[in-house]
Length: 216
Image (cartoon, rainbow, N blue to C red; front, top):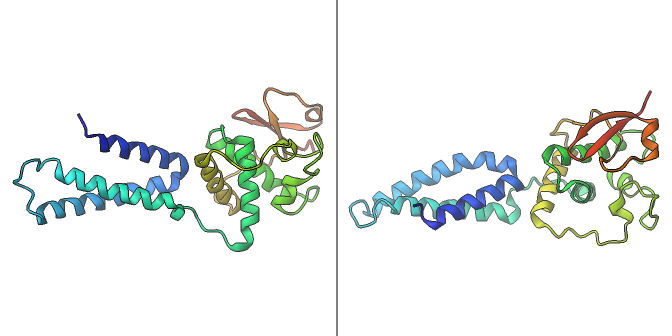
């Protein structure tokens, strides 16, 4: 039976995979180095022939691994946007969080790309925050994204989902992900059928959202 700390490390790795997939891909190399250091320390300290010698290298490796994960958990893993991009990053991350935090990765990216497609379209405002806030905060039914004008708090409560939303938003902002919506400018949940959708060209369905482009 594996020691309890191995399960704790596995749990931290699973959370990291959810929060920061790009960092999770880099961790195996860091862990291999940690294991080498653990073996070196095991030999250097003369623990090879002592009771519990089989457990010692794994214990040292686990402690180093946990230190690495703790360091990453302090936001060192998030890409750092320029100061002028922070407002757009927060606006886009909030939209992804409130519109798609329960979606798979592709669904979250799709919502982010719709905002960016609107920014690049002359029929919509020219910045991320303006696109998201179009219609006003106190205009139920008039705003573009319901969370913005539903009268509820706009402060994220799920910290893991919020961190993931920020990382996805940054990738979308800097053009590091493809657009799964194929240029969509609108979407709605699959459990509603708004009248405006009849005048648009239906695009892909991604998760619980259906996306639309112009008909021309």
